[in-house]
View 1 (cartoon, rainbow, N blue to C red):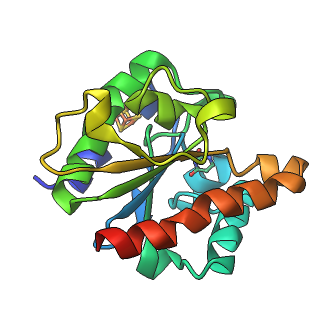
View 2 (view 1 turned 90 degrees about the vertical axis):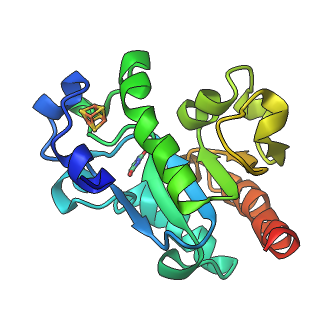
Length: 189
Ligand code: URA
Ligand code: SF4
């Protein structure tokens, strides 16, 4: 059974009981660039697509400013595929239950650059990182004891795009973080 079908029927954590359905991913799976956020929100749960509501739209816009288009240049998913009730933060055990799907995605589609948005996906890969100190840095996963993958994979942590809604000055910071993707992409592939 393919991963999409497995996730569709998954009952590995409690979230399957309250969400409409798991939200898988969107974008170009061959792009080698993967964005990982947190968990779907209410509107994603209705539209059955990740990153479609307000903060998702801001992120999409910022990426378009730097000429990155969803159906061509990147792929997006969440660390937890089902919407948590009332949009609460995902729990540790939910991340633990759902993250093997994420790892399978990374291996299957051979992603080389991972952009984590906010702390849940960042701390899944590197538990000691802090957004305030480490966002905008380009880090190598295998230097942080990640030997699950064959090849070098780079990690770029950035903010939760919702900060751009409440504090427009952060838009420039997110944009600068993400502009590094161009150079990295040219260097790597
Ligand atoms: N927030 C997330 O973390 N993921 C989405 O898909 C939408 C909002
Ligand atoms: Fe399964 Fe992930 Fe949904 Fe939990 S959040 S039920 S682990 S797909």
